[in-house]
Length: 440
Image (cartoon, rainbow, N blue to C red; front, top):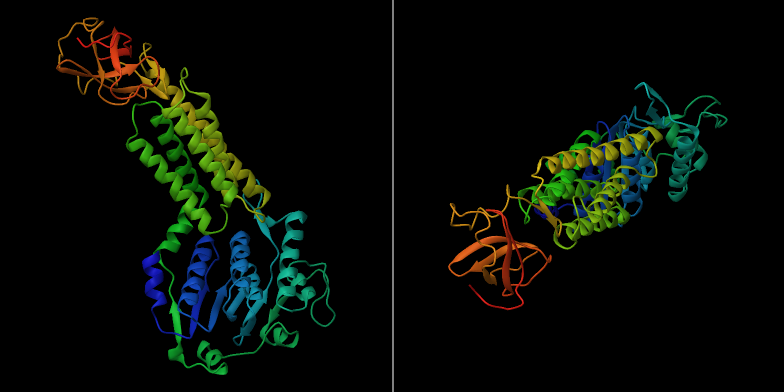
């Protein structure tokens, strides 16, 4: 991303043109954020947002609105054909609005999906939030807030513009008459010319592959997959010695999820705090605590990570149905991961020893360094040696010329500690600190 940003920033241009066409999604936020940053790095004098959109996700449009309101560079919306619903909010967030002939803006009533999957108008609570958002945005840009409110609420009537029970959609001429347009331009080049710029002064900031990746990673279906794979990877790491491919896969899935949701403004610092707290608890479960079967710290960690997922999937303008869907996805992911972990634990040998967050059994320990394959179980009991590595509680012990993968009965012992083997079940050798300190 940084390379792409540097490449775009190196282009010489006094005006940067960002195009939002088609449906507005969370990838739009990623695109707009990077485009504004590139324009600032390129010392642009103006950013033009060309709009040709029927609308889209309100949470994405709300974040895009904040980016435009906070932009240190002057912004102009060019309504090329249409800026409806969420697109109208983005246009309102720009300092100036210019219409192309035939352009329209408005029709911003919030919609959602009901339990049957039908597209219905959102409940009054959501509509009220959207009305306030449009009104506040218009006020911030010095425009009549009642006109913006009429784009959302059919009960708002404005004499000479819109009757009650009708949703407001402004044409180019109406927008100019009611101070919702700062001019008309046949083309984008015409808009630039009116402001004293030549076509060569403009840099078109293209949509990148990473924006589509963000769009995909923030979809509910892929979010559920990332959640399940991430949690399962961490759970499996709590069941086997060391830290390997399952932990790496789990961490990558968690990182991809939160990275994408952070870019689009859904994952806030509270989400990151839940994630870090959960990962810390999981790491303690793996490397620190001693417990039987699945430890309490591991459960707490998974719950905290689940909360991090949930708070990253909902925002202030997430509808009730979308919120319930997020709860269902997170809950199902956590429960499914725990059930799979329970099944895996149940399949391990009954003689397993669970210490320091690692489940140890004759099926998974002792094979790497046990050179005496024909040794009789119990034959090594009483042998003395030293810890060749730190034991957490798994590690390697040196017993004369032999090296065994051992399990520390006391949980943790540093490298060089004298050891004695107290239990030998073939591949599974349990040791404790040797108070006599001898080697045999």
